[in-house]
Length: 135
Image (tube, rainbow, N blue to C red):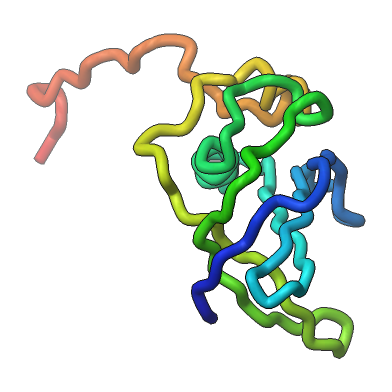
């Protein structure tokens, strides 16, 4: 793992992995001239981190296909991982320059489909009467 500077070098796009996980991808050029991809996953477990990293890039909740990232250098973490027997480099994280993710759940949910939105409880659970507990 190493920190370096990188600048967005193309348009972001949305897609799905072979296992069906939705993601947003963005090509970035490192200060060394190497081009690598950042992927932010839109799964329930990763959506908040992805939104924070997109916010750091200047995303304000508009459609990903219409969004143009800020044209400046960002601090990024580059990692190597192994996939199908080959080592590859990728941007694992974009430094967070904003304290909060955008409140753009409609745009994110549109990418994911309604089923990917975190489930909210329909009602508060009923209070438990501790006098009825036999121990």
